[in-house]
Length: 262
Image (cartoon, rainbow, N blue to C red; front, side, top):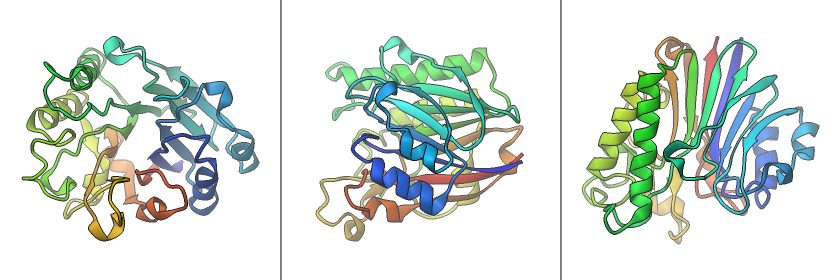
């Protein structure tokens, strides 16, 4: 079975329902994983999704903040919701497809503005979330799994617009990159996007603060698609759908796609 998966930090699924439906109509992924839904599960607008054939959803939501959802044309079942680092936040949901593949959708804490946990609680929460993910992978080695989401870290030098200028900026600091790689390696996760697009600058997020985000192009690759080693070879067709960042009332993130032949 071949299926295409998309991950997108939507920055309010209710506010941006029109562009969610636009993406589904125009690009038609089989599975759409959303982060930062900012909605209780029961208030996620599903009528338009169902009208387009997306009849299946698992979600973990809360009012006004965080929130993750997996929306699908393919049947799926809830496979878990974990409160990593015991933050009490709706940041993870997992679903299992009928072919046995488990999809994990994560929204890792952004980490605030100061990369020092002694003065910035949010940065500590981010590092703790990653450490808890790492420990979970070490204790329960994932198999036949895909992990996607806004992981809020751009790990490589070519995942940011200026490596040297961003070394002290949250999302690209050495400690974050170190913890990111520890977490990825603990589950033997493969970076699907960079396996397909190994060279060159690649971004999935551009700040709202930029007057002309497209021309300035000061982006970061914060959104990721990983797969366990047993299925990563089945992945192909990775792309960042940059055009969506320029849609009306956009998210500051662009959707990231990958196709799996399983």
